Amino acid sequence: MRLDKLLADMQAGTRSEVKQYIRQGKVTVDGSRVSPKQQVDPGTQTICFFGKEIHYQKYVYYMLYKPQNCVTARQDAGHKTVMDYIVDKRKDLSPVGRLDLDTEGLLLITNDGMLSHNLLSPTKHVEKVYEAKIDGWVTKADIKAFRQGLDIGDKTLTKPAELTVLTEGDISRVRVVITEGRYHQIKRMFAAVGKQVIYLKRTAMGSLKLDETLLPGEYRELTKEERNLL
Image 1 (tube, rainbow, N blue to C red):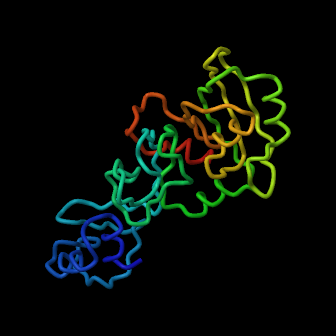
Image 2: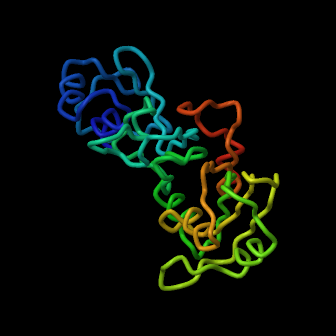
Image 3: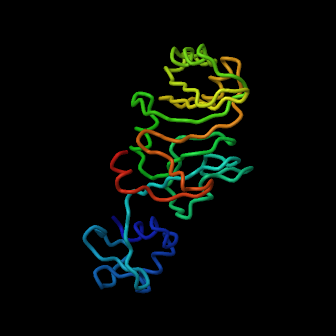
């Protein structure tokens, strides 16, 4: 790839800024000065920026513990977004799917478009796991209804979902596993059986499980093992 594009992708500066750095000799490839248009192979060549070696990554993967009251988007005029928590400001980074404003939990941030597509495609049947608190007792009839599919006002019923009661009571704690991601889906499913979600947290997406050592708003890169499983 072109040297100036590589440096811009690595947040060394804007495209015009890195061109100036290259022309000023602040960038070397294998110890030599080059032009901004120079084609480089970051896998085999040593690229230094102000004397420090650049380690280029084509794809990056971050696990964010999304807090409540932030929007799952790159930009939003009225609210803080999930991208505001990420120090890496590559322009091609995006959240995979979305969580509602008041929903917290696991969110993957990446620039791997194919992985994002595969995780979100309904045809791939990737499981999304949520824990929720429900206003009211969750019954066996509710569990059966979730398993059969619910009419939430769309053209088709929801796909079969697994509903498990973790704690019974006036406020029930439950786990829900779905394989699609419709708008406000969990909330609409419970509304369809006459109940209200008062707390919602995503704990897993496919093989990726939320790192419970993270606090809301914190994130980390995925491990090699987590990337391989995905």
